[in-house]
Image (cartoon, rainbow, N blue to C red; front, side):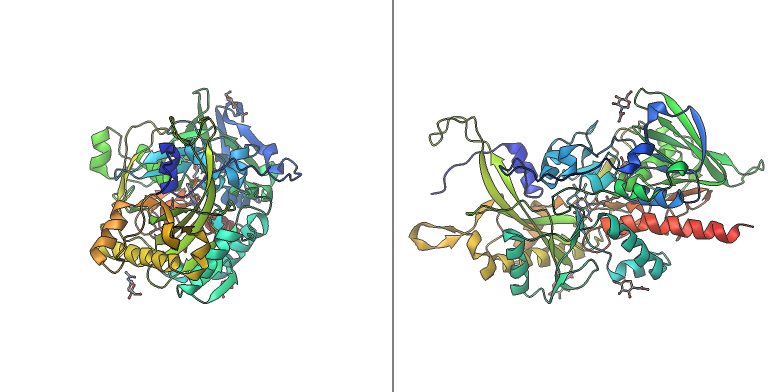
Length: 555
Ligand SMILES: Cc1cc2nc3c(=O)[nH]c(=O)nc-3n(C[C@H](O)[C@H](O)[C@H](O)COP(=O)(O)OP(=O)(O)OC[C@H]3O[C@@H](n4cnc5c(N)ncnc54)[C@H](O)[C@@H]3O)c2cc1C
Ligand SMILES: *[C@@H]1O[C@H](CO)[C@@H](O)[C@H](O)[C@H]1NC(C)=O
Ligand SMILES: *[C@@H]1O[C@H](CO)[C@@H](O)[C@H](O)[C@H]1NC(C)=O
Ligand SMILES: *[C@@H]1O[C@H](CO)[C@@H](O)[C@H](O)[C@H]1NC(C)=O
């Protein structure tokens, strides 16, 4: 008989949403460090003037915004406006052991991880801090797959793509050290036929590989903000606690019907005071506010579907029907088990790149389970029980199912309402069935034997936390039902300002001058196994392209 363990619902919810948590007895490794040099040009929005001029204004100091700003500052005056604060110095953000605590502390209003829930009822999170998603994510780093470049609608210059990845990787990407659970999963993936073993690789190759991580060997997180150290300090200002409310637009000529141009932005500081940042001739406003933030800001600036904006009473500046449409989230499904042996804390390190539409990843954590209030087993119920929990998950490629974003308010601080329509497309469901079957194969591998408990009568079996896989994994119906019933997110949501629909192949807004969108909102599919490598590359890449473009037109 299993011992009855009762645990806090909150932890349980998160576990379902990834396996998880902290407060390991092991003291954190000490690592001498100096304050990062970029902090010298990070200001509180309250310190900025009510009006100021720049060449480039970047909205969002996140995964794409930071490398983009650093690159443009080599030749131009740049302002970055970030609604959140600074991550550096906050232990939960800066250490891998704080990953779940940060997510548990997420609320819709003022936490570094901003909680939101899709209309399907799946809890999710957005970065609200300098570094964006890279300051709260699981750190796994792997470049885009070949199909991404072919299908993204962009004429990628592959040489600049590679140079951009390398620029990012030199600064913030590390080789992880695998321990028990990750090693077992690596071997289990190979036993399940996801081969060959490709060793440590940053690029996308079919088979099993060890990917990169933005956590170093001390477990310390590096973020997109570190890339600001590449900036030219005299040319850049980064403002935190600066919430951008509108893109300011003006006609480029006095003639009726002439094109609109972005001329700046209006933002508010922590004290509620308004500021205007304006761009000069040849300057641009660039939105890097992420897949939720960028379409939301366009809508609030009067750029979007005319009837929809009118219904909200927002003056229509430019009718652009696809803003906020084609919003995607890759469903995540999997299992968690309690291990009979102590486990390392690991976020994602190994990945199985299958050829049947799914990627397999793993994590392990030590989770505090609150003891039952009137336990017959434990006399002092005040101290939690720490249990090692291991998770195996699959993420489908694509997805093909898409949803959309709607405003919940005209206040930029309020999360929009999002709907992802998980598994609306039957191909997505089949990919999930394929991926979860693969998890079944891995659970049956010899490499995972040590993670089973000894039963009565000498057998061995896994002890699942949350739903186990269906017993009959060959039954398609039952597997489909498992996919739908246990869907959660891997936080790779993207789209909303997709290339070809809202922006052109140079990330310029269709129909408006001096305005671009450069972030994950431009993706129509999730690149590779995990998106951050590609989003970081994108920031550097577009920065380099703009510098080249302007060099060409100079003189
Ligand atoms: C919990 C979690 C775990 C993840 N794990 C991984 C992983 O292991 N590997 C991986 O590759 N990917 C992972 N991801 C996904 C990855 O981090 C994101 O896809 C990526 O960071 C998105 O980058 P972005 O530039 O599009 O947006 P973001 O990095 O979110 O940047 C947007 C920035 O804009 C700011 N902003 C928004 N609106 C405004 C406004 N109005 N005014 C001013 N500022 C604004 C935000 O505060 C934010 O800093 C994870 C994501 C999460 C949330
Ligand atoms: C920024 O200013 C606000 C309001 O004055 C204050 O609460 C906050 O602590 C400041 N933050 C930083 C990083 O200086
Ligand atoms: C870019 O890098 C990829 C993966 O490492 C490699 O296969 C490709 O040949 C490189 N392309 C160029 C143009 O350097
Ligand atoms: C599911 O897996 C099977 C067997 O590997 C494969 O033939 C099929 O194409 C996969 N389905 C999808 C949608 O990728």
